[in-house]
Length: 270
Image (cartoon, rainbow, N blue to C red; front, side, top):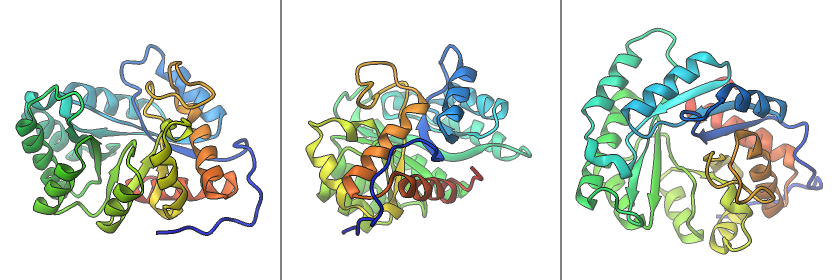
């Protein structure tokens, strides 16, 4: 697992086109302003991510409202006790409609840090969404926190969807290699700009760029130099710039490749 640096010097993030492939626009007071600010910063595509049936429906409504915005539908491990019936119905109804902007199942997975839902329930609901993604032919967006072995075991048992991404990847080189070995993509958030995120930064430095996407996970995890404030999709440019610095590549090249990766992964035209 290695990369070759570009010969071009690393430049600033301006005048590049980006896709924020994982943000949460639902629940924001003024999503229109966030989308406009993102466009002004060169963010030409946004994927707003659902975490339960109600919020997934809200994301789909936002995707219908704004050009360059797409949506996912998923049940987060924190809310796994809700069960999957409502989400499955939403997915089936959406896919039956013409012109829908549903592009993935998730985010879903396992969270053994907070354990807001019992682990057994998390596992069952995650496995069911793996199967749902395969059934409907959509990509899978995975949330995993302090649950790497269980996450990989479920993917091994049920068969990973052809297009799968570990969103907000926080592992190190070993976890990155396991994910790459099974064919998954890695999505990098603002955590990569935190000096304390040593393992993650080491992983990003060696992962092939063709296997990376960038995200904000806004309104969470604002990157340096905005850390501690509410995150916004426009700040994905800082994530991309840090990826470029760690890989010794030009920012323009990272923007071009990660945007193409997102377009291919989600089947969108950004």
